[in-house]
Length: 408
Ligand SMILES: Nc1nc2c(ncn2[C@@H]2O[C@H](COP(=O)(O)OP(=O)(O)OP(=O)(O)O)[C@@H](O)[C@H]2O)c(=O)[nH]1
Ligand SMILES: [Mg+2]
Image (cartoon, rainbow, N blue to C red; front, top):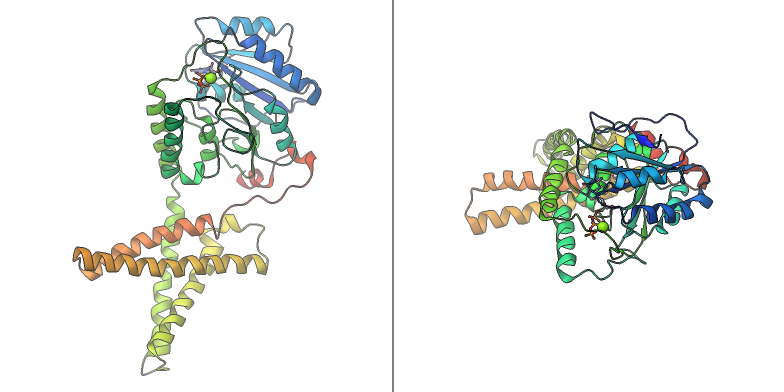
């Protein structure tokens, strides 16, 4: 009864059937027979008072040679909230978590290591954050109250280097989390419903933030404990998996179409700039001074580009933020970024021509290309950043957040 049949096919989480279960927590296990009873006892003691009869613990075991699944199944007699998935045809932590979520009934889903290295007590605070409107509540070792315990210098350095590498490849994902390597978090199910997930290795959190529609993220500090029983499964292979995962996620989430729209709008701005320059400065028209005319023409192009980016390129980010003060704020940010972009382009042009002796027009084309990318990236992050609407009441935890609804 407690043994679940293993989901097959794509790693996609569909909308669950209506259920009285609010929270489904996955415990991934591989050779954790010495820890499984203890973690279930402790978690039950913590969650019973908070969510009486409204949570489930799903143990996903990859057919451990030490038969962890068998012990978990036996424990279900004493702990009816325990369900067990014994996977025999797949391996890997991240996919184990997703397979567990595919069996989950809760509107909030989550994960915690089964080896008691994540203090189970952190679950109360994470649940609280979900009740206060978070889409994702993450246990973090790098915020107040957090720490990595007595990790040696090698492991600390490896972990931080992996984080830095991730920041370079996926800044829009890892930049949102102080501890992207965390394996202890709760997530609003609707944030990843119907998304095709495809992680490699261990790092399920970056997969969720990378491919899901995650609005508000909240973090709670915790100190990573020493493993008391059993052995670590961490190996060098996981670092290779991590890099594959980062690259796969980057390739799958490049905003190519949006960038093409941004570049098209920028191109239209060239005509506005040229047209205005002619109207203002040409001896046959107004014959104003060249500098004044160029500044006004440039500003005209910026206005044109802002309008089209607001109504077209970044229209999804604008939804619900159409008041004049909000528009003005976006415009000023856009103006500031584009202005800085012009200075940046001038510097790049000079460096290429002066130091590398490049043809000025080729150098200018290179500078324009780089600055367009720079402008796109910064404007996407700052002027048209997707922000969740504030959620004030605690009852919203189990409803969809505005961000998740937007994604649907
Ligand atoms: N189902 C499943 N669970 C796994 C797999 N690999 C690890 N786990 C479980 O995932 C959790 C984290 O794995 P650990 O090996 O402890 O990794 P870690 O905590 O990052 O590293 P240590 O500090 O060295 O223990 C534990 O509960 C493991 O039993 C796997 O391939 N499949
Ligand atoms: Mg561990």
